[in-house]
Image (cartoon, rainbow, N blue to C red; front, side, top):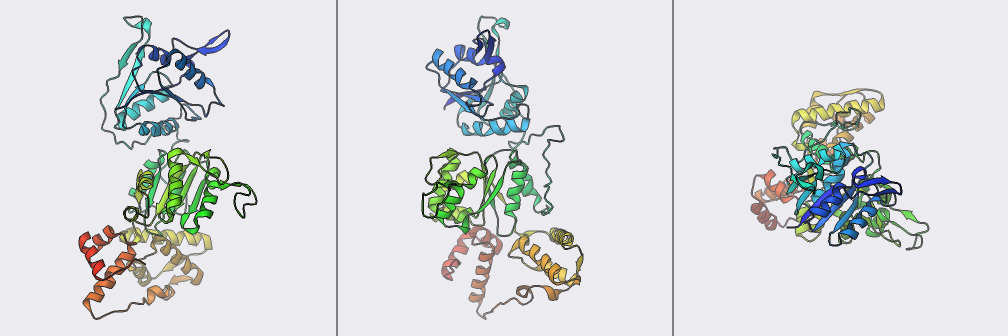
Length: 482
């Protein structure tokens, strides 16, 4: 198992001011540790600066370590912390680095850094479940020898969940669980998903949102963005199924003038426009294997390849969504397993509207009545018969279909709305019956498959049969996916 050391570059401790200017402090914590206790494959040295162009202290210190300890491997990481006493920001910047080395034995040098930085080390050690140890050093003058004393902090790991949410007491900076948007209603059926989404927002990991069309996947993606540290940066939505490969590639990554027919100017890609923010890739299951490979590069290298230009680093968070069964797509060779695992570090599944409780359905109906009442500056009501029709209707289009129906009532009706204003597809559904039992079973299986977008596991569960039985009946009835 690889053994690594990780610590902060502490300007106040690792450097000293002399008549010649700022120089390396040979009695500073990081230098002394290398001098007396270095027994690692690598030292990850974290700088809160954005890059070496902004602050050259990190390069200066790293070169000094290489000069005096040529066998020691030092990797300098600039992680761009704007406020070193912002607990949320420091945590979110450190977490991905620790996760990257989750298979290694990690010694965390606890001494260098601000009080908040040390608190973050403590929280990570207590909650992440990684093979970490906290180390301090005691200055030589306080020890029994003339060298610093290395001390391993013996702590009892608490039974905190690994998804601990960090919040500060400052109410102005405190993140709130209730979305500011007035265009979403969190019912009891949706609340567990939004609770998980809030936890996801406190980290910077990639998220995959699953759910049928019309369930509110984009709303959930926006919520994650709005509750994260990226909330003040752009949130850009891309419908991946609406563009062919060449257009999608150009839109996402940009291109250079003259790089292909029609490229009359330099074009900045959406990933560049979203710098520091989030990109929501809707219908990710519809992209080609070629585009899947290019997205994998972004997730792995944080780098895009604009058409006709040199590669460029980007700092964006990717949130993806699909109504397809990506595992089944992977098994069929239509989707890359490696991309699936990269996207689904955390997956959030939004339930279908038909699975909502009656109380939740009523809550959403009243929510949309109030929402469109404000938009159209008048109010309407639903007759009891109409409300009962709505509550028993399956809504294959989910919440979006309900919302569109309520707006239809405002456009076409006034006062109390009756069942006559229901769309024809609900009032007079076109169902052709067969007298044969096998035909009825075939049609029923096809209908449930369509409702669950051919997700075999969910369909089998809804039908009350085992998966193998469903597969046999699909073969028996020669049911083809539309």
